[in-house]
Amino acid sequence: MALYTVAAIVALVLVGRFLVNPLLRLVGRYGERELFVVVGLLVVLASAAFMHSLHLSTALGAFVAGVMLADSPYRHEIEADVEPFRLVLLGLFFLAVGMVLDVGAVMERPLLVVALAAGLVATKTVVLASIVRAFGRPWKVAFGLGLLLSQGGEFGFLLFTQASEALLIAPQAASLFSAVVTLSMMSTPFLMLFARNLEFSPDSDGTYLEGPEGAPRGAAIVIGYGRFGQIVAQMLHAVDCSVTLIDKKPSQIELSERFDTKVYFGDGLRLDLLRRAGADEAKLIVYCIDDRSVDATALRPVVDAFPHAKVLTRVFDRRQLLAIDGAGASGAVREVFESSIALGLMALHQLEIDGREIEDVEAALRHLDAARLGAQISEGDIAAGMDHRFQPGGSREGTSILEKLREKRLAAKVAREEAGGEAA
Image 1: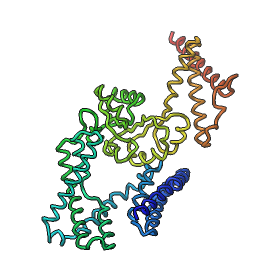
Image 2: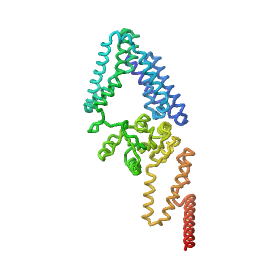
Image 3: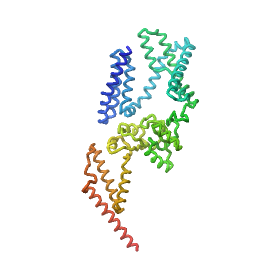
Image 4: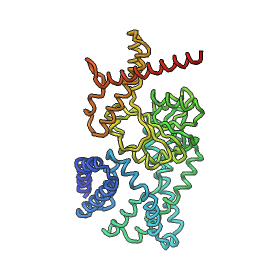
């Protein structure tokens, strides 16, 4: 039976990898958000129905479907779409847990139920803390994690019910065990308070990284504190803008702490983490991460979840700029565009080109690049707008722009001279 169940799970995972992910990519191309909800529900129901047809747990099938969707590149889009239903479903879950509780079984043997629940919590705490400690974490962190994960899980209710139906345990025992699990789950808030009082938080050796839950609420959130994000953050600090810094690279966080800079750990594309970081109150969210896979499906949920905040992002190149089109971001900067222009201007200065001519070249180049980018976005083709650029042998459009800039500059010079003569 165990091999039978494992084979079914492996089959579902393979279907998710080779069927569900391509289906989600197809849905992503259409850009219809409602389709993500439909596909998500279809995957969950189909997975549960598949398990039911094999006389296995439908809840297990739904759980595997959730894992498959979480492994999808469109997980952020799906998470944003199901966000409105999360609190409702969570409330229904706890309502169901309360209804499962057999009050009669608790009242009949209250001391036994409490003792079993305490034994369950204590046993799981010791086992989990030992496992965490075996991976080199300090005892404080290991004990805190053990406390937070020591409760019985909701799958216990399913196991007890099926075991009772299979006549493996008596119905009275199933009621007793369900009451023990329920009581252990009720202890969660108290265990969290206890773990917090133990200061289950970052250790001095950096083995545990602090999330943004306790970060001071800032007007801006900068995600990614590498060589790009550091410059952006400095400019915001220069105008006394309060900034919350987030990065998901432990090495970068530890390096920043050596320079007395507080950077919080987390994935800045996750909506729940952004809320904990104060995105509901922030005016600006700036993505400075070096991640070429970020596209419109990753940024759109952030823009929709925090409409009052302006979202700016760093992109690797022109292709990624096209990929985020439609996300609703307020602005994007190619990471090498400005530095390339700066080096090009330096090259022209070294060639002793006239300073006014250099200014005209820069203005013309920016105009051509903007026109080319507009053509690429409107046509959805990276090869569009090829004539909007300077080429060997000259460019008709580029030459025309340069001539207009020269004429405008000369006209401004003549106007200044005439104004000076009249003043004299």
